[in-house]
Amino acid sequence: MSNFVKSFVLTSALCAGLTACSGQQASQVVSDETTNVKPVSKQLDKPNIVLILADDIGFSDIGINGQKNFTTPNLDKMAEQGINFSQFYAGSAVCAPSRSVLLTGQHSGRTPIKANYMAIPQQDGSMLYQGGTFTPEQKIVSEVLKDAGYTTGIVGKWGLGEAEDTGHPNRKGFDYFFGYLNHVHAHNHFTDFLWRNYQQVPLKNKVEKVDCSYCDKFAFDGFVTPLEARYEYVDSLLRDEAVAFIDRNANQDKPFFLYYSLISPHANNEADQVDYAHGLEIPSYGEFADKNWPESAKGYAAMMRHIDHAVGQVMAKLKEQGIADNTIVIFTGDNGPHQEAGNNPDFHDSNGELRGIKRDLYEGGIRMPTIAWGPGLVPQGKVSDHIGYGGDFMATFAELAQTSIPNNTRLDSLSFANELTGKTQTAEHEHIYWEFHLHGSSQAVRKGKWKAIRLPLMTGPIELYDLENDPSESINLAAKHPELVAEFAKIMAENHLPHPHWPISKSDQSPDRQRNPIFK
Image (tube, rainbow, N blue to C red; front, side, top):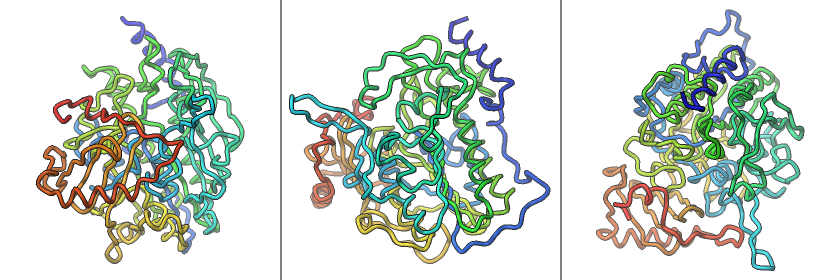
């Protein structure tokens, strides 16, 4: 028996009796009937809003979108009772810029945080690396909703400002925060502390430091928790905290906005430095334990089951409190599936027919499984082909809250509130723009059925795909449509705003290029 297996068996035994770290319930459909006594819903003129954001998820990682290796009954039920968006996109292909787009309503060419970290030139010619954050003047969606009378909370991963930064969530319109501030800290699903607002909350887990070549760019050391020292599974703590936020704020005199920012199925990349664990950290493989699969594949599937159960718990709590009829819940992701910590996104066919993964601007890197649910507001059983992206949450939530958006977001954020509520026709983007700065820079534009890709950013050749007939982006039509290539080149030039702290990689070696050299 390997050291990993021995340690995993030990950890499973330890976790068996611990509610906080148990993942066993992740295989269950959460019942609608959580209590026999349901409170009377307090009718507000504005809906509660719950946004659930998965971290590194493929379009086909949910059953309703074709997943076969594991099931997601609560997400599938959410789609069957609501809207399944077939063409909804993240704001970027990696964590920080995607979240910045989501919160600011500005696309990745304009949003203030354009990559996971800044590279600031120093007088001696060296570079200072540090994470980006928001300034007091940069208004984000939580501030818009707070000003509109909402109680606001974030549970989970922030990644856009540290405790002393102006971009701390409590300084950016969130009344309540519980979770991780730092990206690298959020890698560890069994960490030894979390943040509640400005205070550190100690956990029972005992971590050990490991070598990490990139962690200094995020100003955080790399840690892994030995399997025998894992007592509290943070994903479960976050789930319980999200449900508790709903409990506290249900049927109050004002509506609430909950941003439930998951840390799964993101891996703990630092676990590559030890031989006793892998980065797909989960207390138990559950139903996948006896599968003849790689350990990382079991972990990924179990993580997805845990996510599904957490979504079910949120829906059940809204029903229990009698406020589901005045709440809109949206589930989506920040970028495509990863190939980190031994995970192979092809094993579970995480993207189906879509090309690319995390850090690609091909469809697999940015097209997200996206579902909206709200029994009193959202149409039931609809598949929507509306083309939208994470930057649209600003305008959409502002419209639902009956307020306006900041002037600097009007170019990039378009409300799809009509699509959510089944009202009149929803306005469509003339085009949606993306850019990506690291690991092989790139640009992309979606306009109607057409998608243009350029690697590297601003200097590479433009590829052109007809997504209506070629969703796999396998046939480059650029040579046949020079007029479209010229139009897309103009859009790319107009939307890229150079900044010295966000340098452009000159490499065209995106993850897709490295995985599929035939496409070079």
